[in-house]
Length: 323
Image 1 (cartoon, rainbow, N blue to C red):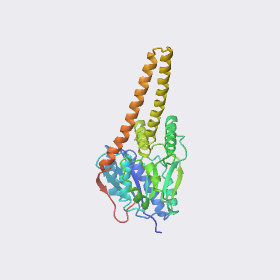
Image 2: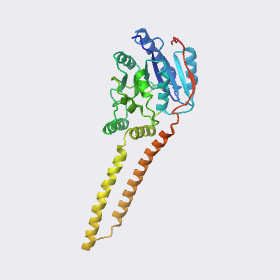
Image 3: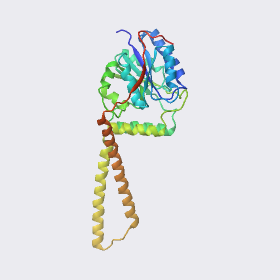
Image 4: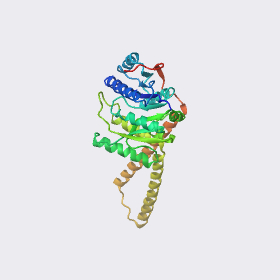
Protein backbone atom coordinates (compact mmCIF):
# COMPACT_ATOMS: atom_id res chain seq x y z
CA UNK A 1 0.00 0.00 0.00
CA UNK A 2 1.29 3.45 -0.95
CA UNK A 3 1.82 5.97 1.80
CA UNK A 4 -1.65 7.25 2.79
CA UNK A 5 -2.71 10.85 2.30
CA UNK A 6 -3.45 12.33 5.73
CA UNK A 7 -5.57 15.39 6.44
CA UNK A 8 -5.63 16.88 9.93
CA UNK A 9 -8.94 18.68 10.55
CA UNK A 10 -8.79 21.53 13.07
CA UNK A 11 -12.07 23.29 14.05
CA UNK A 12 -11.36 26.91 15.04
CA UNK A 13 -13.44 29.49 16.85
CA UNK A 14 -11.68 32.72 17.85
CA UNK A 15 -8.26 31.07 17.91
CA UNK A 16 -6.04 33.91 16.64
CA UNK A 17 -3.80 33.72 19.72
CA UNK A 18 -2.93 30.06 19.39
CA UNK A 19 -3.17 29.52 15.62
CA UNK A 20 0.46 30.40 14.65
CA UNK A 21 1.80 27.90 17.19
CA UNK A 22 -0.72 25.28 16.08
CA UNK A 23 0.37 25.66 12.45
CA UNK A 24 4.03 25.33 13.40
CA UNK A 25 3.57 22.20 15.52
CA UNK A 26 1.23 20.40 13.11
CA UNK A 27 3.46 21.20 10.16
CA UNK A 28 6.47 19.85 12.02
CA UNK A 29 4.62 16.63 12.80
CA UNK A 30 3.49 16.15 9.18
CA UNK A 31 7.01 16.79 7.88
CA UNK A 32 8.35 14.19 10.30
CA UNK A 33 5.78 11.60 9.19
CA UNK A 34 6.49 12.30 5.52
CA UNK A 35 10.24 11.95 6.15
CA UNK A 36 9.66 8.58 7.84
CA UNK A 37 7.49 7.49 4.88
CA UNK A 38 4.44 6.93 7.06
CA UNK A 39 2.23 9.33 5.08
CA UNK A 40 2.17 10.87 1.62
CA UNK A 41 3.82 14.19 0.82
CA UNK A 42 0.37 15.34 -0.35
CA UNK A 43 -0.91 15.36 3.23
CA UNK A 44 -2.46 18.61 4.48
CA UNK A 45 -3.97 20.44 7.44
CA UNK A 46 -7.55 21.70 7.10
CA UNK A 47 -8.59 24.55 9.40
CA UNK A 48 -12.35 25.06 9.76
CA UNK A 49 -13.29 28.59 10.81
CA UNK A 50 -16.58 28.24 12.70
CA UNK A 51 -17.79 31.84 12.35
CA UNK A 52 -14.93 33.39 14.33
CA UNK A 53 -15.23 37.06 15.29
CA UNK A 54 -11.48 37.69 15.52
CA UNK A 55 -8.71 37.38 12.89
CA UNK A 56 -8.75 33.58 12.73
CA UNK A 57 -9.77 33.44 9.06
CA UNK A 58 -7.30 36.15 8.03
CA UNK A 59 -4.52 34.10 9.62
CA UNK A 60 -5.69 30.92 7.87
CA UNK A 61 -5.58 32.76 4.52
CA UNK A 62 -2.08 34.06 5.25
CA UNK A 63 -0.76 30.63 6.14
CA UNK A 64 -2.41 29.09 3.06
CA UNK A 65 -0.84 31.62 0.69
CA UNK A 66 2.58 31.06 2.27
CA UNK A 67 2.24 27.28 2.60
CA UNK A 68 -0.49 25.65 0.44
CA UNK A 69 -0.39 22.55 2.67
CA UNK A 70 -2.34 24.68 5.16
CA UNK A 71 -5.89 24.68 3.76
CA UNK A 72 -9.12 26.13 5.13
CA UNK A 73 -12.90 26.22 5.23
CA UNK A 74 -14.85 29.26 6.31
CA UNK A 75 -18.38 28.55 7.49
CA UNK A 76 -21.01 31.20 6.80
CA UNK A 77 -21.86 31.43 10.51
CA UNK A 78 -21.12 29.79 13.83
CA UNK A 79 -22.51 26.25 13.44
CA UNK A 80 -21.14 24.77 16.67
CA UNK A 81 -18.10 22.59 17.30
CA UNK A 82 -19.68 19.28 16.22
CA UNK A 83 -21.06 20.70 12.97
CA UNK A 84 -17.79 22.47 12.16
CA UNK A 85 -15.91 19.24 12.79
CA UNK A 86 -18.31 17.33 10.54
CA UNK A 87 -17.84 19.94 7.78
CA UNK A 88 -14.10 19.39 7.94
CA UNK A 89 -14.37 15.61 7.98
CA UNK A 90 -16.73 15.45 5.02
CA UNK A 91 -14.54 17.83 3.01
CA UNK A 92 -11.29 16.05 3.89
CA UNK A 93 -12.51 12.57 3.02
CA UNK A 94 -12.79 13.51 -0.66
CA UNK A 95 -9.00 13.66 -1.02
CA UNK A 96 -7.57 11.88 2.04
CA UNK A 97 -7.09 8.21 2.90
CA UNK A 98 -7.32 8.98 6.61
CA UNK A 99 -8.34 12.01 8.66
CA UNK A 100 -7.35 13.05 12.16
CA UNK A 101 -9.46 15.58 14.07
CA UNK A 102 -7.89 17.72 16.77
CA UNK A 103 -8.77 20.97 18.54
CA UNK A 104 -6.71 24.09 17.86
CA UNK A 105 -5.86 24.80 21.50
CA UNK A 106 -2.91 22.32 21.60
CA UNK A 107 -4.21 20.57 24.71
CA UNK A 108 -4.29 17.22 22.93
CA UNK A 109 -0.79 15.81 22.56
CA UNK A 110 0.25 16.17 18.91
CA UNK A 111 2.92 13.49 19.37
CA UNK A 112 0.11 10.91 19.59
CA UNK A 113 -0.57 11.45 15.87
CA UNK A 114 2.37 9.18 15.04
CA UNK A 115 0.76 6.37 17.07
CA UNK A 116 -2.54 7.01 15.27
CA UNK A 117 -0.85 6.52 11.90
CA UNK A 118 0.93 3.36 13.03
CA UNK A 119 -2.41 1.89 14.16
CA UNK A 120 -3.90 2.85 10.77
CA UNK A 121 -1.09 0.96 9.00
CA UNK A 122 -1.97 -2.04 11.16
CA UNK A 123 -5.48 -2.03 9.71
CA UNK A 124 -7.51 0.09 12.14
CA UNK A 125 -10.21 2.26 10.58
CA UNK A 126 -10.82 4.24 13.76
CA UNK A 127 -8.24 5.20 16.39
CA UNK A 128 -9.44 6.91 19.57
CA UNK A 129 -7.26 9.33 21.48
CA UNK A 130 -7.93 8.71 25.18
CA UNK A 131 -6.54 10.72 28.09
CA UNK A 132 -4.37 8.76 30.51
CA UNK A 133 -5.67 10.72 33.50
CA UNK A 134 -7.52 13.86 34.55
CA UNK A 135 -5.07 15.04 37.19
CA UNK A 136 -4.87 18.49 35.59
CA UNK A 137 -8.64 19.04 35.90
CA UNK A 138 -10.38 20.60 38.84
CA UNK A 139 -12.20 18.24 41.21
CA UNK A 140 -15.57 19.44 39.92
CA UNK A 141 -14.70 18.97 36.25
CA UNK A 142 -13.14 15.58 36.89
CA UNK A 143 -16.15 14.36 38.90
CA UNK A 144 -18.74 15.61 36.40
CA UNK A 145 -16.83 14.18 33.42
CA UNK A 146 -16.47 10.76 35.00
CA UNK A 147 -20.11 10.85 36.06
CA UNK A 148 -21.14 11.67 32.49
CA UNK A 149 -19.23 8.73 30.97
CA UNK A 150 -20.64 6.34 33.58
CA UNK A 151 -24.16 7.62 33.00
CA UNK A 152 -23.86 7.21 29.22
CA UNK A 153 -22.51 3.69 29.62
CA UNK A 154 -25.31 2.74 32.02
CA UNK A 155 -27.83 3.88 29.41
CA UNK A 156 -26.36 1.52 26.84
CA UNK A 157 -24.38 4.07 24.82
CA UNK A 158 -21.08 2.78 23.43
CA UNK A 159 -18.61 5.48 24.37
CA UNK A 160 -14.93 5.52 25.33
CA UNK A 161 -14.14 7.02 28.72
CA UNK A 162 -12.04 10.20 28.60
CA UNK A 163 -12.24 10.41 24.81
CA UNK A 164 -13.26 13.71 23.25
CA UNK A 165 -12.95 14.30 19.48
CA UNK A 166 -9.26 13.51 19.06
CA UNK A 167 -9.37 10.53 16.70
CA UNK A 168 -8.33 9.08 13.37
CA UNK A 169 -10.86 7.81 10.85
CA UNK A 170 -10.21 6.08 7.55
CA UNK A 171 -11.93 7.13 4.36
CA UNK A 172 -14.29 4.15 4.42
CA UNK A 173 -15.21 4.91 8.04
CA UNK A 174 -16.00 8.50 7.03
CA UNK A 175 -18.11 7.23 4.13
CA UNK A 176 -20.19 5.29 6.65
CA UNK A 177 -20.33 8.28 9.00
CA UNK A 178 -21.85 10.30 6.16
CA UNK A 179 -24.82 7.91 6.12
CA UNK A 180 -25.84 9.07 9.61
CA UNK A 181 -28.24 11.89 8.77
CA UNK A 182 -29.18 13.02 12.26
CA UNK A 183 -29.15 16.72 13.06
CA UNK A 184 -28.47 16.39 16.78
CA UNK A 185 -24.81 15.46 16.44
CA UNK A 186 -22.88 13.68 19.15
CA UNK A 187 -19.91 12.25 17.28
CA UNK A 188 -18.42 10.55 20.36
CA UNK A 189 -21.47 8.30 20.41
CA UNK A 190 -21.98 7.96 16.65
CA UNK A 191 -18.46 6.88 15.62
CA UNK A 192 -18.43 3.67 17.76
CA UNK A 193 -21.67 2.62 16.03
CA UNK A 194 -19.79 2.22 12.74
CA UNK A 195 -18.17 -0.93 14.07
CA UNK A 196 -15.02 -1.09 11.94
CA UNK A 197 -11.71 -2.28 13.50
CA UNK A 198 -10.55 0.25 16.05
CA UNK A 199 -7.79 0.90 18.58
CA UNK A 200 -7.02 3.25 21.44
CA UNK A 201 -3.99 5.50 21.89
CA UNK A 202 -3.42 6.96 25.36
CA UNK A 203 -1.89 10.39 25.80
CA UNK A 204 -1.36 13.13 28.38
CA UNK A 205 -3.46 16.27 27.99
CA UNK A 206 -1.68 19.61 28.32
CA UNK A 207 -2.75 23.03 29.46
CA UNK A 208 -4.23 25.31 26.83
CA UNK A 209 -1.36 27.08 24.98
CA UNK A 210 -3.13 30.46 24.70
CA UNK A 211 -6.57 32.04 24.63
CA UNK A 212 -9.67 31.07 26.58
CA UNK A 213 -11.62 27.83 26.72
CA UNK A 214 -14.52 27.64 24.28
CA UNK A 215 -16.33 25.19 26.58
CA UNK A 216 -17.41 26.93 29.79
CA UNK A 217 -19.59 25.08 32.30
CA UNK A 218 -22.86 26.08 30.61
CA UNK A 219 -21.77 24.71 27.23
CA UNK A 220 -20.36 21.56 28.80
CA UNK A 221 -23.65 20.81 30.55
CA UNK A 222 -25.62 21.54 27.38
CA UNK A 223 -23.32 19.26 25.36
CA UNK A 224 -23.69 16.47 27.91
CA UNK A 225 -27.48 16.79 27.95
CA UNK A 226 -27.59 16.70 24.15
CA UNK A 227 -25.48 13.56 24.17
CA UNK A 228 -27.77 11.82 26.66
CA UNK A 229 -31.04 12.74 24.95
CA UNK A 230 -29.68 12.03 21.46
CA UNK A 231 -28.73 8.45 22.25
CA UNK A 232 -31.12 7.17 24.88
CA UNK A 233 -34.81 7.22 25.81
CA UNK A 234 -33.92 6.21 29.37
CA UNK A 235 -34.80 9.68 30.78
CA UNK A 236 -38.32 9.34 29.35
CA UNK A 237 -38.63 5.84 30.79
CA UNK A 238 -37.46 7.18 34.14
CA UNK A 239 -40.29 9.72 34.07
CA UNK A 240 -42.73 6.90 33.30
CA UNK A 241 -41.36 4.84 36.20
CA UNK A 242 -41.65 7.87 38.50
CA UNK A 243 -45.28 8.22 37.42
CA UNK A 244 -45.99 4.60 38.37
CA UNK A 245 -44.30 5.03 41.75
CA UNK A 246 -46.27 8.19 42.52
CA UNK A 247 -49.47 6.47 41.39
CA UNK A 248 -48.78 3.60 43.82
CA UNK A 249 -48.05 6.07 46.63
CA UNK A 250 -51.26 7.95 45.89
CA UNK A 251 -53.26 4.70 46.24
CA UNK A 252 -51.62 4.04 49.62
CA UNK A 253 -52.36 7.60 50.68
CA UNK A 254 -55.99 7.23 49.59
CA UNK A 255 -56.36 4.00 51.59
CA UNK A 256 -54.80 5.68 54.62
CA UNK A 257 -57.17 8.64 54.30
CA UNK A 258 -60.26 6.41 53.98
CA UNK A 259 -59.25 4.28 56.97
CA UNK A 260 -58.59 7.43 59.00
CA UNK A 261 -61.99 8.82 58.04
CA UNK A 262 -63.76 5.64 59.08
CA UNK A 263 -61.98 5.57 62.43
CA UNK A 264 -62.49 9.24 62.99
CA UNK A 265 -58.80 10.05 63.44
CA UNK A 266 -58.32 12.41 60.52
CA UNK A 267 -56.31 15.51 61.29
CA UNK A 268 -56.06 18.39 58.86
CA UNK A 269 -52.41 18.67 57.77
CA UNK A 270 -51.71 21.87 55.87
CA UNK A 271 -47.93 21.27 55.69
CA UNK A 272 -48.17 17.78 54.25
CA UNK A 273 -50.75 18.96 51.72
CA UNK A 274 -48.62 21.85 50.49
CA UNK A 275 -45.51 19.69 50.28
CA UNK A 276 -47.30 17.05 48.25
CA UNK A 277 -48.73 19.66 45.86
CA UNK A 278 -45.32 21.20 45.29
CA UNK A 279 -43.71 17.79 44.84
CA UNK A 280 -46.25 16.51 42.34
CA UNK A 281 -46.22 19.84 40.50
CA UNK A 282 -42.43 19.80 40.24
CA UNK A 283 -42.45 16.25 38.89
CA UNK A 284 -45.06 17.21 36.29
CA UNK A 285 -43.09 20.23 35.12
CA UNK A 286 -39.91 18.16 34.93
CA UNK A 287 -41.70 15.51 32.88
CA UNK A 288 -43.21 18.08 30.52
CA UNK A 289 -39.85 19.75 30.05
CA UNK A 290 -38.12 16.47 29.28
CA UNK A 291 -40.82 15.43 26.83
CA UNK A 292 -40.58 18.87 25.23
CA UNK A 293 -36.83 18.41 24.81
CA UNK A 294 -37.35 15.20 22.87
CA UNK A 295 -40.12 16.75 20.78
CA UNK A 296 -37.80 19.67 20.02
CA UNK A 297 -35.15 17.27 18.78
CA UNK A 298 -37.70 15.53 16.56
CA UNK A 299 -38.77 18.96 15.24
CA UNK A 300 -35.18 19.76 14.27
CA UNK A 301 -34.63 16.36 12.66
CA UNK A 302 -37.69 16.45 10.38
CA UNK A 303 -36.77 19.86 8.96
CA UNK A 304 -33.62 18.42 7.32
CA UNK A 305 -31.87 21.78 7.38
CA UNK A 306 -28.15 21.78 6.45
CA UNK A 307 -25.84 21.42 9.43
CA UNK A 308 -23.37 23.90 7.99
CA UNK A 309 -22.91 26.23 5.02
CA UNK A 310 -19.44 26.72 3.56
CA UNK A 311 -18.74 30.32 2.57
CA UNK A 312 -15.14 29.98 1.38
CA UNK A 313 -12.74 27.13 0.70
CA UNK A 314 -8.95 27.23 0.44
CA UNK A 315 -7.58 24.09 -1.19
CA UNK A 316 -4.20 22.99 -2.48
CA UNK A 317 -3.30 21.42 -5.79
CA UNK A 318 -0.82 18.59 -6.37
CA UNK A 319 2.06 18.31 -3.89
CA UNK A 320 1.78 21.17 -1.38
CA UNK A 321 4.69 23.26 -0.22
CA UNK A 322 5.48 22.73 3.46
CA UNK A 323 6.44 24.99 6.31
